[in-house]
Length: 209
Ligand SMILES: Nc1ncnc2c1ncn2[C@@H]1O[C@H](COP(=O)(O)OP(=O)(O)O)[C@@H](O)[C@H]1O
Ligand SMILES: [Mg+2]
Image (cartoon, rainbow, N blue to C red; front, side, top):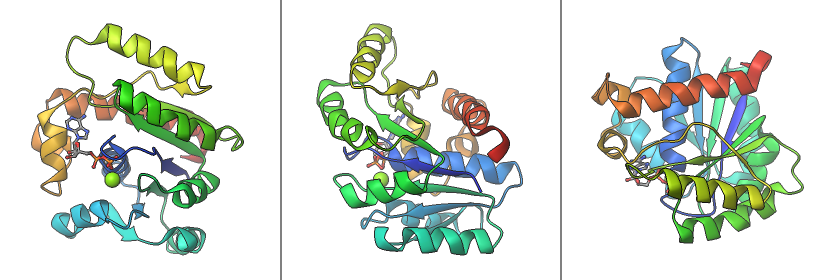
């Protein structure tokens, strides 16, 4: 059962947005996917409540219950798990990374966010798990900013995902409505970025997926 952890020590970097969109992509492919929300703020779970009966399922659990929650999901036939984590949650992030086949680290490309990336890089240093920074909410015409942010991430020893998300109203609206970008704007750029990321993730997970 492929398991993706979304971690970043900074709030507002896009962890929940990424988690919900990836799990929904799996659901659209007919896979039973589950988001495990380990953030005490339970933002992903609130999104799941608004969404109602539509997949993916979102469950909450404290970090100490993560591995048993994953086992339960596996026994229930879940085919993909995405773990959402809180900011500043060392234990939560560590447990999520331990359980994951692939770790994604969303971050904005601004200086303060890149500074916070250091803590996440420290966490990943001994984890020996495939991990990639995913730049999120990148402003339009910011290719220089993206280039220098990518260089900073690499200096910290982190790989950079070739797909990034732009700053898009569809992402912003999705979090407030229990929907995902493709449901709000099927032909929009946000939907295209999600689909490109999903394809890339599938290639990384390979036979697991
Ligand atoms: N690419 C994006 N474009 C526009 N708004 C975004 C984007 N990614 C996230 N947001 C918005 O930023 C806020 C924080 O995102 P969220 O995914 O909750 O971050 P985190 O889980 O890391 O705290 C939310 O209101 C979300 O809708
Ligand atoms: Mg969140």
